[in-house]
Length: 388
Image (cartoon, rainbow, N blue to C red; front, side, top):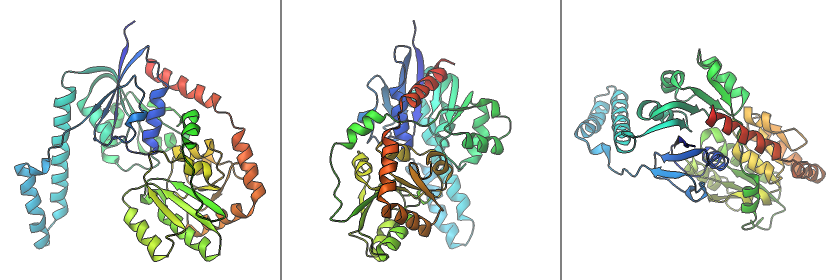
């Protein structure tokens, strides 16, 4: 039997929920029926060792700077001139960004996809990745994954989304949001819930232990340092807990565009011994496994891989009332929900820290949870997608 040629396109393989869900997806594919290629548009490969060995990985290694093209140089010189004349420099910047974007797309298409055709092409990220798959990849069928609770690339999506054969989402709430944003795509939306391999997570959680720095309690947050993840809210909550004389250390694991802001907040509040920023960790699971409370302080969140992983490691949870938080936390059984502000995060965390019995009950409830049905459903969903 001839294998089906399947292409996954992803932006990169740095540490993040989408990337870890991609690793899980690739572990549940039937490789006797499918020949799978993973194309990575950026040469950022921290999680590459965890990719299934049956997958052929192709990385865009283009390091040329399109900013050196004569037209790009002209636009770059024009921007400060426009600013000096108090004219519309933003329009020139947009032209520059579009030129660089188009040049890179043309290069990738010519270099990697000019002679290739696939039975199925999967854009595993929305936005520019979905645009690339639609415009530059030849495939009999094309599928787009939409893995966000907000629509930050509406102009791109309004053009390319109706052209995909299917749009995959991880939760009914996201499906409902897409149906409200776009007309005529309801019959193309399918749901594959996020999942991760709990056996691998538990095995990795035992690789090392994390110190409480002599404190009574340990809190943990693992996330990208961006506004939607609310790390600044977590630091504010840590300040409030510290002012209330609680003995704790809070590990905030990750990196991102708001890292400098968070570091400054920690210094300004003199929390250097209380809020620890270990940066991005290839294996963050010992932090989750050793903590007394896992805190998800997000302003926006769909179904969170980090939250699922913390639950797999039996960590009692405090989560803000995002779409993902409300869907994933069974209040008082495996965690507590709070409002999306620092005071509420601190107050609810304080309640859980003070109640040893409730934390023990949550751990017991999480330890009894079986993931065999979720794994079976996840595997069947992927088989249906690849065969359908």
